[in-house]
Length: 154
Image (cartoon, rainbow, N blue to C red; front, side, top):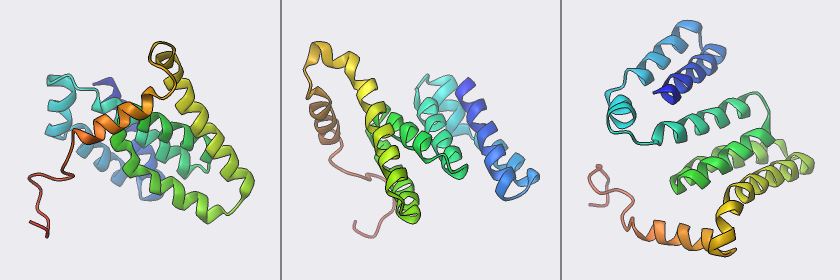
């Protein structure tokens, strides 16, 4: 629940900067009072709220032009849940828009450093390539990207 409150504060701060304080308050309230968020974290005890907090923090860092910090947070999100990959285009578009080699290099170094720092303690007993095996086995567990959602391909 603490991660949900922190995430709602970041939503308030980010929306308040670009929209209005009222809109920020409303969006934060929509998030924190969303039954799915409450059930998933407070009742069911899942850690998705921490993942969401990391992704929102990365978006806040990106909005403040702190691209290296954002890259590190996006990498942490991917290391926490492979589904974090879907947010990486946001970072890539920002890097493509800046077109500065030093910023791109710094962001890549921060992302790789974060991923290595997260994986290293587990690599001691599992070998150096264990993370790739974990990612491929995790991806293989989800043969469908959408099961019950509406799409045009059913």
